[in-house]
Image 1 (tube, rainbow, N blue to C red):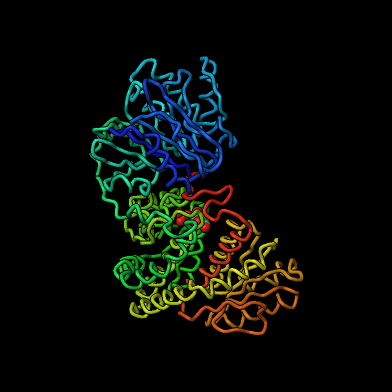
Image 2: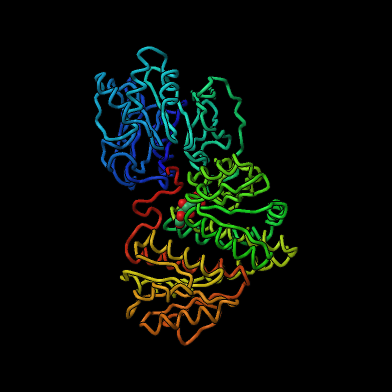
Length: 588
Ligand code: F6R
């Protein structure tokens, strides 16, 4: 959460470079934004609340040294005063921050007694005054290091001092990536923002600090002061991949990328599936962990491994796994699934599992992310940069990999490849004009609904959970995903005339029971939308999805994505940046 971008170099449009970087990172937080540029011995700051939208920094002075921030509010409301960057009392130090400075309160009181004046309600501002205090008796880099080492919690900071000329960055928990240029250098909270400028990057590790100048970057351990030789990595993503292209927003673009991604996993995911399956085969207990949408991939994994490979694999939610892992041993395997690889609830539980000796495997989309670096075995999802807050292509990528792994475990890799390739073909049909128009019309009909149910059994249960989360997070319609058998244990009480129910009925062993669930809903007046391989008279609306065996879950969830997307458009909302949310959840 929160986007950070910094530039130091020979160009004179630093504020503009930073501002463009922030636009790329805005999915990380869009409560407010701010840019600080150093020019003629002064720090000039521009801050605004709300999304960047049509704003510009054309009114900022020429500068070759600037940084900026997009905020997802933690401490203090969404106001201009609380937006970053924050300045010290002298106006000569500026700071931006991602994370939560857990022990800020006590330090703030001490600083107030020493005469520091605070203008915001943020924890961040406390740190800039602490640096100011330390700078009275030591050089700026030492002051930043000392202040950073006093911070409790998971944080990333960047500080600048008008007299210093370097970006000073440090991280513990929240991501920071250094970009190496030619006579210029960069810093960002996500490598995707660096792709227009450089492919040579270094992902800062926890407790590392970087001093970034136009002609050099120095990395050292913030605790010991020892120098670190950075292992520079080459980015594989291109700047074009992170652009919207012909689409009106990122979500629609990412939905339409899915046939290609799923087809690519079918064609070349075999060796990745081999690596994961041999780990699982040798393990004494495998545990999958993910958050939100990725947690539904773990539930799907549980069904897939049982059904295809006859293996029991446990699944857990990242934020809860830490409380239930005392039984892990050095024979356990934890498969952590994450698009960003930065979700703090996953990282924390995985670290605990690692301390118990468990082997960590990661199914992750972002190269060099914290999870990627923490894992003993890494498999890249290969979905390319995902920028809409609601996860789409990373999720179907996760599903395709899990299907492949289950088939490899079962000794049937060719069959795995076949069903995934079939799902890619069905996806292509689903995303063609006719089916999309049908879903658009349905969305128009349902757009004023207050509540919706999504039901299914077996693999359609995680599909229901996923469809419900998509609908609520972007269209703000309350949707509940349910195992269809649970209806009569309570939720049926809320069904009244016209309540929309999306029912998944693939061609598998759950068909009859799912049909029974749809009928129970219909008998209470529900408006039943059947998502199935064949029509049925119980359906008030029907969306055809062909049969791809166990991989049918992939096109099924894409129906959910499309419906959520068009409901959102019909309600005049922004699908890429839903209220109160941000991508990459790096706070607890
Ligand atoms: C929902 C969504 C979130 C993420 C969750 C985990 O559409 O995007 O629920 O799935 O925050 O994120 P990652 O996969 O980055 O760990």
